[in-house]
Image 1 (cartoon, rainbow, N blue to C red):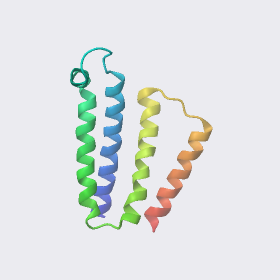
Image 2: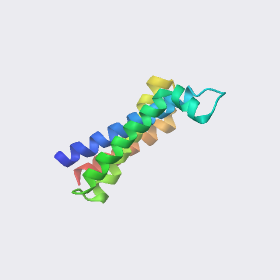
Image 3: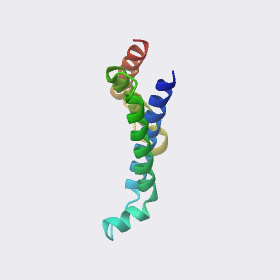
Image 4: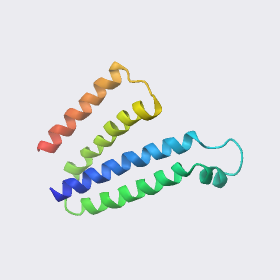
Length: 114
């Protein structure tokens, strides 16, 4: 159970990191050096940092969990980013995308029960 908690925390932080990267990318200035742009878009730096923590937790979890069990759970990050994209960035959700999301959720449930 502890390993599953670490995996889920890693996946959650990975999704938060991706959202930070998107948020920061939307705020990149059109002028200045890449360094100046990155500093001005602090969510970009924060997203990278959170994603880094997620990676460290993932490595820790892989010490004791089978990769064939853990890796499919990363798909939960797709679900979290999908939902956040709708609410935070007002991205559209088509029926086809929703169907794909339901398939991903089905796969996660099957792997988690194995």
